[in-house]
Image (cartoon, rainbow, N blue to C red; front, side, top):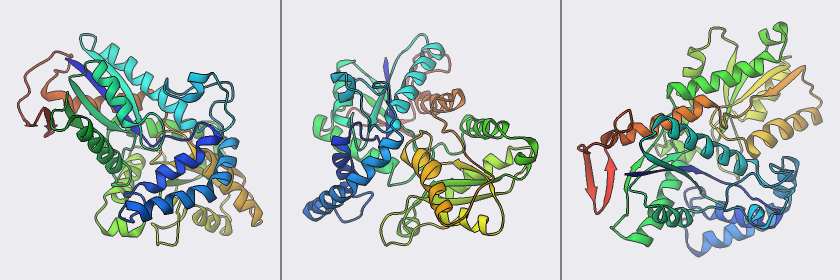
Length: 376
């Protein structure tokens, strides 16, 4: 048995030259922009990417993730060409840290099994076809798809699963070389919740007691169009469940609210908007905030730029000032989060691997061709 764990993330541009391509891939995704695919959506994606790329590139330069050289995967052009980029999304290097941390965790936890961890990005390198080719070369027999999205949404986890399945069927048809299992969500995983609370504690520890006591928590998640919510997408409900579970485990209960960021276009999105909510608090004289990016487990443009830079600049331009404003560090490779990922993967593999890593027979699963779909 050779086990492959595939971490799924959205990816990010690694150089100014590919910001436009990254945005094109993003807006071409019919799970994100529901235009039905086809030539009209391709044209829309090309036009939007062309006009947005220059400003987006400026934002990425402000939070460049690899100022001293590439920290991303072996598939990154910067690493291959030994180029230092001034416009690389931090998500690339941080996801690589997560991949390495999880692989190391499995080596200690399942010493009798061969476990290799891969990263599959949705909108930039490495893509699904590249990872599948590597898995075939590595002789993988069992694989678990693990999204770096704790809460399920058709626009994130759903999109990654759909893309993976499309590529897999194109490459292998029904003869999938491995038995495949899927982690749908893990928004109430105890180790995940512990990691969030530990990051909150780390942020609070940098404040004096008086500041801690008057700090208001703003949980911020990526917004979704209300059409998605009304269609039954569970993401918003699961976000709220995560927030409440985090707060239930805290001895000191700071005041807290949930908000949504990153809205795009004229559609009605989930409310309240994060920036609007913070401004409303400032208007009431509240000036101490801890921003908690509850749905983002890997720091990238939404956390490092939108929350840390853009929101503060917008508030100050409107004449408001903070006494203390802090953004919680992302979970990234926090040990408890890495353990949460491992726990979820092993839960799906429990049909074929014992807790101590021994192989066993796999009842309780159904076979489609050579693909085995977990019923866990």
